[in-house]
Amino acid sequence: MARQHTIYRILLASIVVAAIGVGAWALLKDDRIEVQGGGFLRDGEAGFVITSFAYAVGPDAAEAGTCPNGMSKNVVEIFSETPEAARRAGEDDEAYGQRLETGGQASSQLPDGRNMCMFPAVAPLDPHTRQLLDPDAVADGINLDGAVSRSSADIRSRRFDFVSPDGEEGVDNQFWRAVGCNRSYQSDGQSNVYEIGMYAGEWGILISLAGVDDLENDDHVRIGIHASADPLRLSPTRAALEYATYAWDADPALNATTTGRIVDGVLISEPVDVQFHHVTNSMYTVRPLLDARIRATLDASGQLNGILGGYTPVEALYDFQFGYRNARNGDGTPAPEARRLQTSNGSARVLGHTCQGMWQSLHRLADGHPDDGGSFTSISTQYRFEARPAFLVAPELDAESDDA
Image (cartoon, rainbow, N blue to C red; front, side):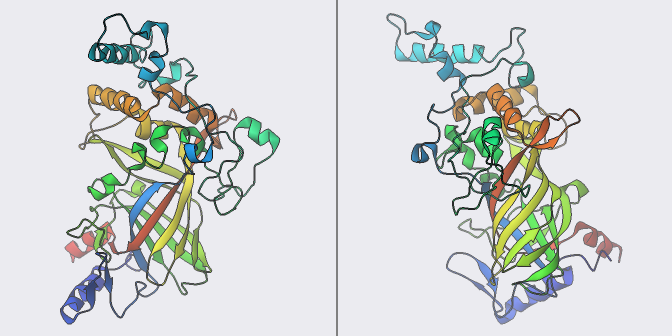
């Protein structure tokens, strides 16, 4: 049974490689490699490697006017507005700048000396963190809960849906509310470079399909979402190559399977919990997504474009995106505290937020998975992705082959 459900068996990969000698593959002008004279779907199965992955967001605040109270501030910007930060007589630019940095760093400490990035739950409220609360703001994404929450009560609660740029209602994307007034998440911001790590070989995501009878309309297909065990294969110009071979990660926690359907060429999956690798400053965490679902256009050339949306546990999102409290080395041991502190505080300084401000916003705007007390523990999060054809190999198939 495992062999029947393994996507693109090693035998198939061997056949394709042999076909190179008779001109079955061609290098295109945009550095894509595709099979000539054959489709990406074989015996109802297909594999894809994600080649573009980023948060699904909305228009920039400056363009849309969605942050009338300004943008979030970092600790140096906050300290610079205090009386203690006033420039002193005879103070040159270098000395003044250093004093602002020192004052900002000091304001990141709790009275007992603990750093707020490591202990955001006990930090005082940060009034300088802004949230995107404009009822007319638009955002990319899909309807995750099947409801349209746009009433006055929803708006007052700050848990109200977006309308997408193409007019679709019910878009659940509370993460964008939390960061939409942060300068680093604007179109030219530094927080929009998540996929650089993917192209550097730090992580990757694979998608598998099986049981596909019709690429236009099919009422039942099997879908796999996997963390890749291999780095993204690149051309000499560092463009992602199609029809490369990838094994998915052997860790069951990094693989998920679900079912779905294809409607008018759009792949729609049922919810499933997934998680992927995440690497920051040589520190390893995971990026989980609960009740994740795909809605993506699947065209005849094998390109898959769309949304992966779901709910991220708030504490996990804070840790992989802002605080790095539980970050680990490559060998699984805890990352040095100094590196975690340097990364969390340095990122906050450069990207224009405070750690406690982001922790507070994520909890305030959370909209999923209420606990026994009714408090929401996850926040709707959406990613826009592009995926291209690939040959996928399950790790257990390698083990069976070794035993043969």
